[in-house]
Image 1 (cartoon, one colour):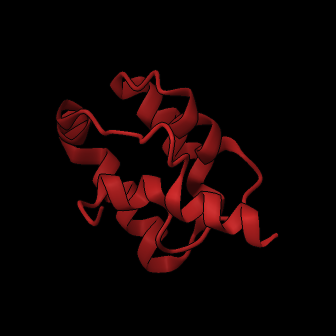
Image 2 (cartoon, rainbow, N blue to C red; image 1 turned 30 degrees about the vertical axis):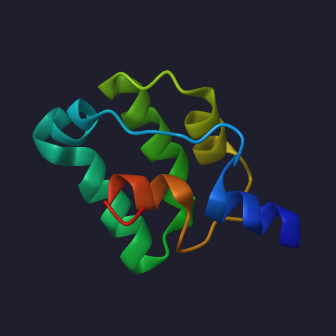
Image 3 (tube, helix red, strand yellow; image 1 turned 60 degrees about the vertical axis):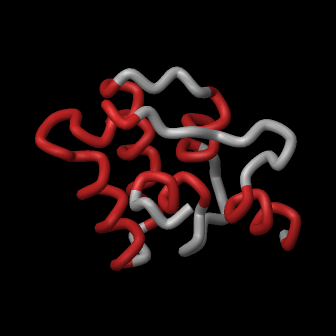
Length: 88
């Protein structure tokens, strides 16, 4: 369980994920809004919705999409949320 939580926070250290700045502007900045809601409300059940939105915005990064669609655990400090919110 601790290993899964560390993967949520740090992602794959051998293949760092990156966010395309165009994704942040997609659909009136929908991705940062969804990420902020998940982060502030700890609404991690919305992570698959975030994955769908990322994919619609053009994300093809399997690490990011699989993480968002995975069973978790998810936590504040999640590498995907941090990247979208500019915390990474």
